[in-house]
Length: 124
Image (cartoon, rainbow, N blue to C red; front, top):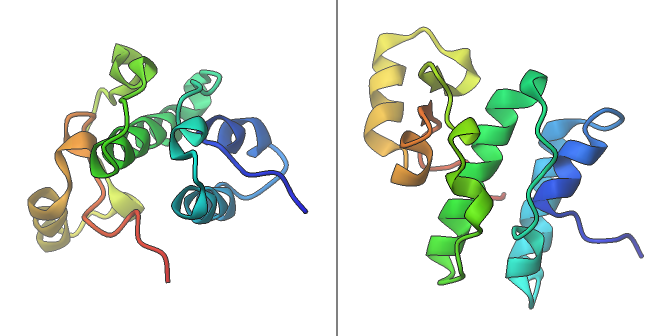
């Protein structure tokens, strides 16, 4: 049986494995875990080359904590987890899609300048 993947593990494992697959595995583990907080509590190692991923993970930890009435980990409030420029999901340049993302993105991501829409935490 494999170990559960935490927010921190996504960054640690991203050199050898696909970030999107790791994120999906994290969400599956989180949604099925009894101790959900243990999967978001530890701060991932900071890497400038993973800035958007780290901002996204901070937004994810913040949103999941709010959604599940968990304590919000202190690390998510660090300034380094806010993008200096607005990032749109899929790097879209389509103005209509950008507007849609701006309207539907949860506050926990918006405050980090990430416009990701309202489906980033959904699983099929």
